[in-house]
Each structure stands twice: as structure tokens, then as C-alpha cells.
Amino acid sequence: AMDYGPAYSGDMGTYAEQAATATQAQIKSVLGLTDSAAWKTVAVTPMIGVNDVSSEIFKVEDAAQLVTFAKSKGLGWLSMWSAARDKQCDGGPKPTADPTCSSITQDRFAFSKAFGAYK
Image (cartoon, rainbow, N blue to C red; front, top):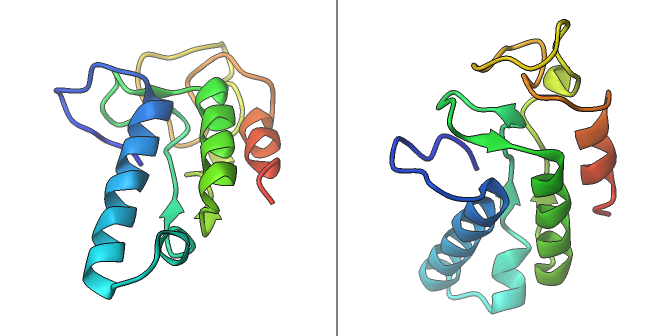
């Protein structure tokens, strides 16, 4: 659930939910599964912090929102890209994605803690 392109103009948590819902509908239709069975096949992996499209910023609050959604649907898997980025950059926020940090203001491992609530 990342890199939505230049037309992005919303909330990354909601975009991730919409992407998961569209994926589930396709899986259900193609494989002929029930709603519940199809949700169990869906995995969502957002890019945390500032994305490659720098206007797209997946925040800790988006992670918490996605966990609530995942619990309500019985999502098969919830993860993040990447654990190495689950910390604030030295010097604070940055306007672009960085492979070593999230580029946003956050506590160390805040995303891991948020996603860890999904069991």
C-alpha cells in the first residue's frame, strides 16, 4: 500500500484500506471465496513515513487506523516497509524518502509498536 502517484490527495490510512478492499474483492471474485476466506489471503505492506512520492506520508496514526481495519476484516497479514526506517532521521524530518529512516517526526519503533497490536 504505497506509491499512489501524483493524483494522491487524501489520507494514507484510508488509501491503504481502499487498496486492501479492492484486492479482497478481486481475490473473492477470481477464486470464488467467501468474504472471510478472501480477507485471510490479503496482506498489506505500507511504506512507513515519507514515500517515494514525497506528498504521500504514512504516519503512525495511519498504522493504528490500518490495524483497526485489519482486525475488523480478519486480514491475513499486516507488515511494513521497512523496519530499518522505523525511526526518526538524525536531524529531524526530511522532505524526501530515506532508506535509513522514516523522514518524519516519530519515536523509535513507533510503527513496530502500532503494527504489533495486530495479532
